[in-house]
Image (cartoon, rainbow, N blue to C red; front, side):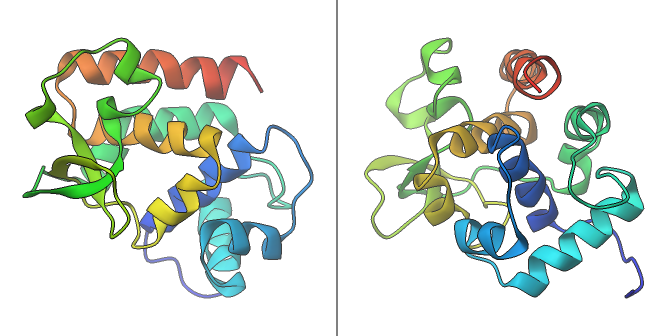
Length: 175
């Protein structure tokens, strides 16, 4: 096994995709195709997650309590982000369901991942990895988990609190 040099952003996406599958069986190749990653990137992500204790020793099951703890208390420090220039993109953070139903914000306060085919105008947020917008558009449940994670990364206290409550429901209570 390669040496562990810390978590990478795509590791979080791999874990969230597994959570979004809600217990459906999956293979490395399936995750790779859904996430627009290579099989080796998925395999290495799961190796890092195993070492970090976020997946079971067989790398088939996410340890939900530890993932939730990492997302709530560590993510914004490990993968910080600041809003960038206004552009067209795919909605994220409080600009995406489920938070966009709880938080009404002005058009100029929207957050997006920059994307060529984007339909929403907002402040750009650097996604966890380059091709995540494409992967998110294929799976609503996965997209919503990513948006909640971005709300923790970039949101103010209120947005973070609402995102944490929603992640708790989706990760801890609906296993």
